Image 1 (tube, rainbow, N blue to C red):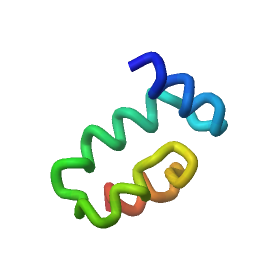
Image 2: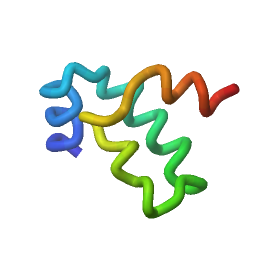
Image 3: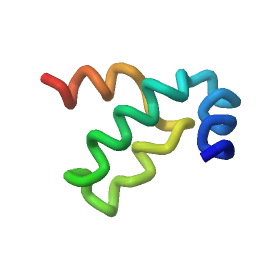
Image 4: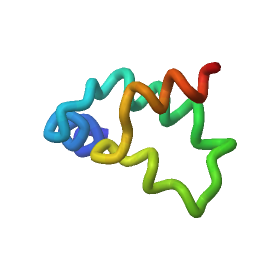
Length: 52
């Protein structure tokens, strides 16, 4: 868990927002696109689009 939080911080991502979004989306997210959920590819815009 610590490594996930630190990785998010190193990529200038809010760990709490990132983790909440990933946990919410991972069940329905295609396995071939899991790279989109990594901290260095994730963005808040992706979170807003999926919520709409």
